[in-house]
Image (tube, rainbow, N blue to C red; front, side, top):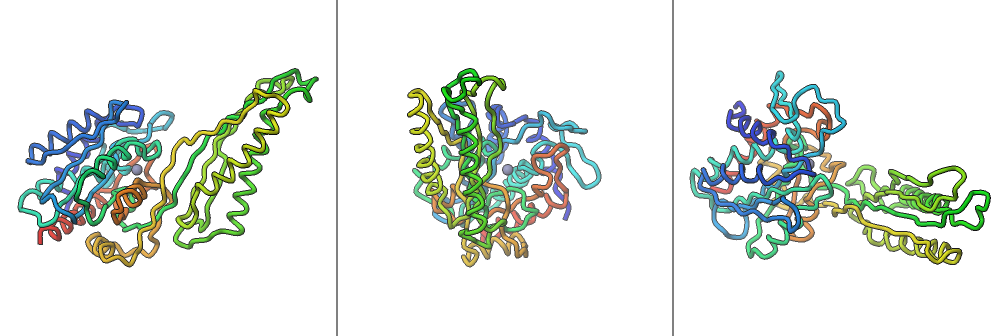
Length: 387
Ligand SMILES: [Zn+2]
């Protein structure tokens, strides 16, 4: 079986829309809606309350409990600052590779799903196939939350959700959760010759970084541990720090960003409570010196981890339909899966064409064979929900 020309044509049309997360995705969604309605499928846009962006939601087949939800995000990471040798917004074929921004992450999957729509509608399905396409996944699974809110008001739930993030078509059931935070330390400026009368924001930030590193070491040494994940413990990491303006000034500001990537057995909120208690200690110490000193903290993005029990019958069925035989069932990147699983209580797996080795990189590509494999999976899925 070769990849149907329609999949490639659809992929080409999806790549042509620059849906980097900073941009609107409405034109792309209009394009998908037009395509769906051409095949007799009505779809609904769930708009962002403030931005020109939307999720797309459609149900093919009977509106009853059960069936499958095929889910993917329409936004991509930026090409800015990346050294592309090909046009990122036009599909380029070279050998068995198709190049373009989003080919792997994850317009390749969306193209396969759309290419399978004529098959989905050609004969009646006995169980529904839901399509759930989101926006702003790449900036912390932001857009899909509005879609989930909308779905909560829908009485019927699919039995399983397949997130088509690139796993080279292997079935994955686990990934860590993440909380990313920004901390602004506001000290008191003065001439460095008078250092003791100021409040040094860099020094306080350093104590925060040190506290986070101590926590990281504790997690690594004392766990909790879960072999489902790699590394099998929660990681804590400070990624950026900026502070001070000149050597002869006691710095009044220092900003840092850190993240926690938690295993399923660890609630990051518990760690954040300990963190906030430490911040409060520092804040009081600073304010005892100067009342207007402060430490501000803000969550930049967060998503829950995913840990779907492997022994569920529906998981085994998906594995069989995907013809996946992997023993390593985890990935080291996040997806919207934890949200579907936690909030809507839908059994969620991750399985999609392409490899994250190519995602987010210049000259991102997907192998034709990956698209073919995904089309095969979708064909078997449709046949199953028709019988
Ligand atoms: Zn992705």
